[in-house]
Length: 257
Length: 280
Image (cartoon, rainbow over all chains, first blue to last red; front, side, top):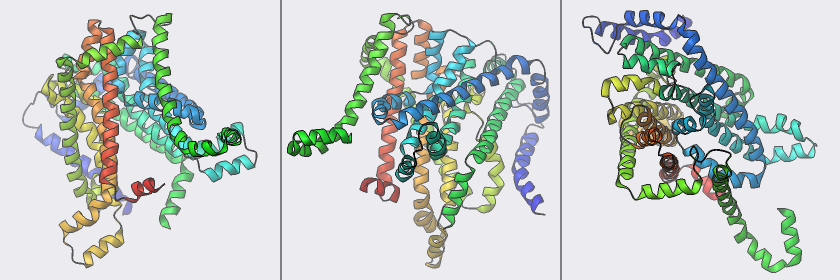
């Protein structure tokens, strides 16, 4: 019974929305809004063919490489800058400025510097995604509990062990918050770099459909982007729950008191 | 740090003890300025030495000169005005929508459960996926920009309002009820103050997201504003001009961040998170 209730809550609104969509496109043939059946058909036709290898997978590959490098660069540089006070003071204004630049602006700049290549698109993703991770890591490292830090020092915990057992766990929640922002910016940049300068990839394909007025195909492209976004968010939530399990547990205990 | 203090103290105890607090504050700012100067010098040197060709990356002095010329041009300010207009309208629309819906949905357990799956599905959809749709519906006008801005910043505020409304203290709510406060009065005096810090966080996040999307729409779609100017400068080969505009967008971003932090501090001056910061 409880399972049915949860299922009902989960599915009721989406089903109602699809039903409204289906009913409102039933009688008329609106040029801009395809019927659900037409969209499903276009979706299967467009994306379950060779396009998945020529456009979808390369796009996702660039996204993964870009985001992964941005996270690694951000955490390593953040650990370094965060633990050296003068370096932090020296770089803070410059980094704040770089974070404030809207990342899509970097597309034309990097296009100029690197030409239209795969490397350029990955570089766009890295240069846009690295700031939230970097700045959150710096902030997380800076905010390490003083008592914990002193205890680690007293017990002679240095070097790699200090980073592994003290710095990374205490900066963890902040770093994960940065990674969450990084993921959504990365997806946006992947699409934009392909829309702006490319002859393949998801972003390019969708714009191409729109320019040739292939409306159901265009909608199916939007659905693909949406699915990638939802998948990323689920993967992130799953990872975060595993990585920060101790943190969520701690929070629950603290809130209960 | 401590070593330095010790040595100066032993050399001249009285004046340094007086000097120390006054001297301590500006070191941070001085280092920050040194960082900026160092960055600009590096930028100046890289094209001058020839690591990157100057026609792809002009030296900092040229770009800053171009930015200063821009400051004197009406066209530049018109573009800034268009971007800021789309930003402001989009932000206000999404805040109003998110606050109204957030308060309605957040205050009912049933509605929250009912909409949860849909919200969790719609929220991660990247707003740039809507670009082709916006072009079809509105063409290269400000409405296209608004559509993207509203969609992207709506979720930032909406989620925060939901959290905020759910965070209402049960005892405070029961107390208000037993004192006979009506539904509207409860929203005004109990729910709203609880949700306000969350709302302000959401607005601060939404403000920077809105700027990103406004510039993106102008860059990709070509609706009027700074983004379009950047695309035009790039395709027209006005390289210093393009870098100058990129700098300008960064400056706008910094100003928006500062203004939003200031507003947050002012509206939440009564809240413990801000008050404790002031005391410490």
